[in-house]
Amino acid sequence: MLRNERPAFIRELKRIERKHRGTTDRLEESLGYIDSLAEGVPRQADPIPYLNGRPVYKLRIKADRTKGRDARLIFYYDGDLLVPLFIYTKADRETVAAAEIRDALAEMDLLDTPPP
Image (cartoon, rainbow, N blue to C red; front, side, top):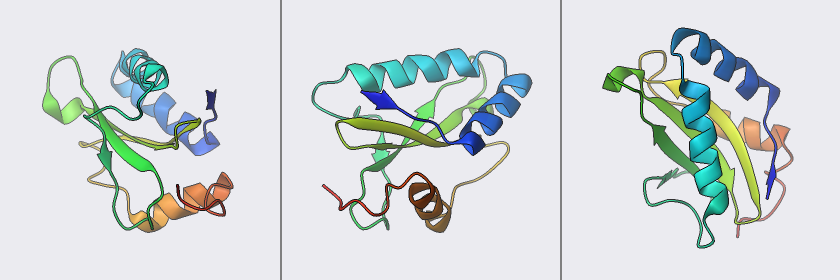
């Protein structure tokens, strides 16, 4: 399974890791878990609407202690390709707009591919 991260994703992950130690480890566990699933995305991942059927999901990555420190991972996963698009904490950001997700998909050349 190919994993490819956007540069903006890497920058945000580093910023969150400085504020909330251990986020990177929990993210790697989550991505490894998604990679290992033969039948698809985990049940905890919610599909994101308004993307014309594109396989984009949101997954909560639990923090050690408080719920406000939980990170949210938005990723593209079509069964063969896993691309982390955004990561953020609820304390820093409420949500990611569908237009931002479409822009990220276009940046990664995933918007031109037809939805499964």
